[in-house]
Length: 391
Image (cartoon, rainbow, N blue to C red):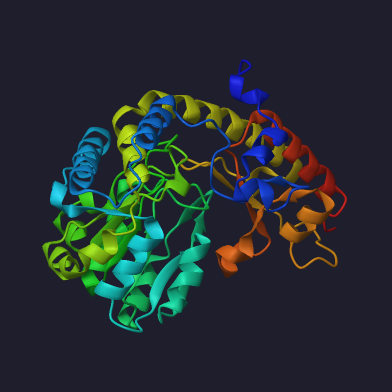
């Protein structure tokens, strides 16, 4: 890949920006927060500049909420062939707010929640705070592919679980679930009368295969699921607080309507304007970012597989998240291999155990940084772990 202008952005630049990612461990290279180290698309910057100039800092007006729903509706149809009524697209602050609303309004109090693991960390921590036990159902390995443990999922639903979380594309495994895999889940859920919360926040970030919205599969999935999406991952807008809850079931829509004000109240006006610009005009920037991430993913795959074996790391089919098996590395007196890497390699990654029991001995690594920074991070990681491999 030829030199890219983003390659010139170094750690000093990002430290000066002052993000959580870059200021939490100032003396380490961070790859633990799922956001990009790329300049935001010009069309989004212009939309925000216009919002600031006009001082549109008040509560979200109805006409902007409507424009967002119309824009998202067009994006979903164009990108995925998914037709959703505008009235079923709720603006929310973020995907976790959407999840929280579904937990409180659509799931019986105290019902366990099925979480296929490894999983996005807050699904494991937020859920018990709302009084719902987490049932971890680890993915199974079928050759080089992670697959759902359908038998166990069905068993847990029959034992009283109220909902299953589906993350597609998957964080942290980088899976893009196939139509066959999704239909197999749907058959189980429909048979037991279950509910699915489908986190599709990374849906624009697919490199291998194509994204299939779970609710778009058939009438059964439409009626037994709710979906959350956002422009925040694909266009790097997490701090602007805008996501969308998509309610395809008539029954769910009627159940949520009385609480719609509370559910939608947190979406910010600048965030909505930025999201409209992203969904409507952000395609060229996204294509550039995806090409850059592809290059980074290939670099990481080559170097990590050479150091730890071919099965240790699989390039993500979607997302910009890598999942690295370091169970052969001895962390010594450190609590985890992630803690070892923070202190011995000055690299900040997510401890896989935070993603569930199935993640022990693994780390989550964010690939959406500049190529020179990623290359340096990989060099430090490999050098430190080569000294501590178990024998």
